Image 1 (cartoon, helix red, strand yellow):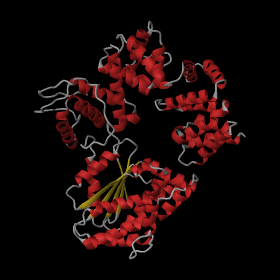
Image 2 (image 1 turned 60 degrees about the vertical axis):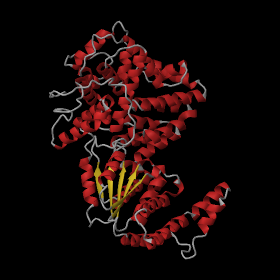
Image 3 (image 1 turned 120 degrees about the vertical axis):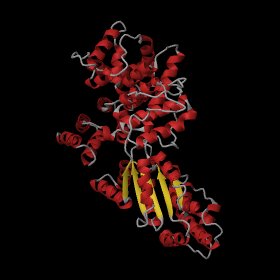
Length: 579
């Protein structure tokens, strides 16, 4: 909604859809994260919470890295040592534990000043870390038969006064060292991207925190997707029910204070999109505009981008309407996720530039509405593309009339599109044929990038709504070479990244696997890796009734996985009992 605004110097954006947005963490709070930063800092200041580990839980793309940066900046004047670590980026993935401990010691070293006694103790702890890598040096040499003499000399010959000590005594000495560093009240370790790590690295990081670094004055803030971390722990110890139970309680033992990073509210989503578009229009005014939003958020005044009294820059009505349109039209799973919002805006920019390059003048709001349909309701967008251009104006007019309350549902359109059809701006009566012709080529390319025409047609038919053509496509695919079958399977998996409802695509993949043994293991592995949580009830039944061992094993694992929805587990169990 665009609210009334006081008179201000209004700068029209040069192109609302020309800018691309990077995926780097923001340095300015655009999302109201101060509501989370404040309780985190409050907890870190509590002297009786010593040591403490806080877990900030949020899905990928929700802004966890940005939050850690804001915590770091807010703690600038605190008597703390801030250590930012990212286990996912550690060069030495074979010794994540040792690398994490070394990172803490290196940061602490800069606060010891000229105190030679403390520096000597710190050096002793560093040697302990080096000694912990002896096993790694031997193991790597044994595997590769390429010995690094300098690494071995350094590892096997610690200073005589230290001796060959293990990390078992590290904790007590580290505790004593921190006790002597009087001007440091806290060492705060900000752990990012733990949910991206392999299971072994996740366990090693948590072990370093719990077993070696969890002493007085130490604090940890772990920003991660809790479900992903628990899955990594469970994967490391096995997939049994006990593994899931252990993973949950293992994490609870380490994290004393869990904090959830909230998804963006509709008002925050609209303001976030407006701020990004405003930055593209006028970068110099961006920080002041972000501050304006923050003040209105604190005062509970909505919408956030409104009432710009005395502002040097005022976003145009066009920009604000577009921000509101996109915020309302994005699918719910993307609406509250900053990364997904940026990705959509980037797709919007690229599509706008392609259209302009073809000489097409499509107003931003019209392009936005069509792109929202394409991204959120892909099958319905394909239905629109398939309508004869002669019949298309009447088809769109009927669709939008139904969206505004008429009773007649257009043929081939899903009920979920009603809100989209009734949304502003109306597109009925506009000449869209040239743009839709362009979009049709881009959809086909994105569906099966690099495929020859015959394989691209098979993908379309396999995913189409005509059973006979899908059956014929399956028979044709079975006659293709294995490498061609794999390319079609890859294209089908690409479709799952863009589809709201992936169950029909998974159903097709299961049918392909049942008919073509050369690709069944690839399909099973890919389903486990990326689509396990999206397997539906019908998919589970198809897996359980399959004659293929790989698919049957998936059905049995669905039954055993307590995180699987009950209806899916029951379907898999029922199918397996029919053997």
